[in-house]
Length: 134
Length: 106
Image 1 (tube, rainbow over the protein chains, first blue to last red):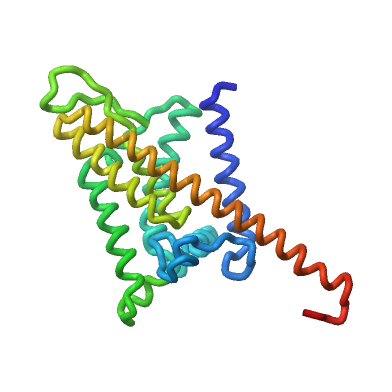
Image 2 (tube, rainbow over the protein chains, first blue to last red):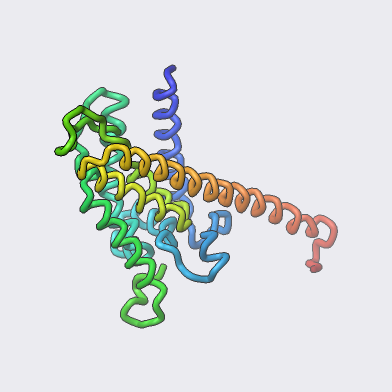
């Protein structure tokens, strides 16, 4: 096997394995899921807090609950899924799909803006932003 | 992941550097560390600089995007392994007192 084939196999097995774990175990009920280091150290939510619970909810088709745990992860999901599709098609079938959006400056700056805005807003102690907290 | 395009202001052909945007978004969301955001900042600069024709700057930013994404991945991955290990370790040893004091204790 070539290194890229090993990498693709490991990534695919990792994603499938993680999906199975997050499908069958609810991160809010089982204690063995890792806690966010930023939250543990500072007590503030980071932009990724709640993404494990959001992934669990998403795998069960509960889109609204998932967005309540981590809106950013749910917004990013279609793009990440598309990136995974591009990678998979390229390295498994040799088919090259368009992925210009990841190389457009406006897109990456928008991502950065969303992440920073979400990070600040979900930590503000106002009722109107409470739904953004995990 | 690299794409081959020619920036407008450069006469010679140069490959568009891999910008690590998807990877840095992934570590930002799943590794819960602010280092991933540094990766996103560099990834955005790769795109901006390349489109301005600054190929050297884009390559330099791509290197830093890679560096910060990997730092985030390693620190986040280390944290996860540490916590998983500690969780299993402590549940084993804190559960052990039931062998000696079945009625409770501690």
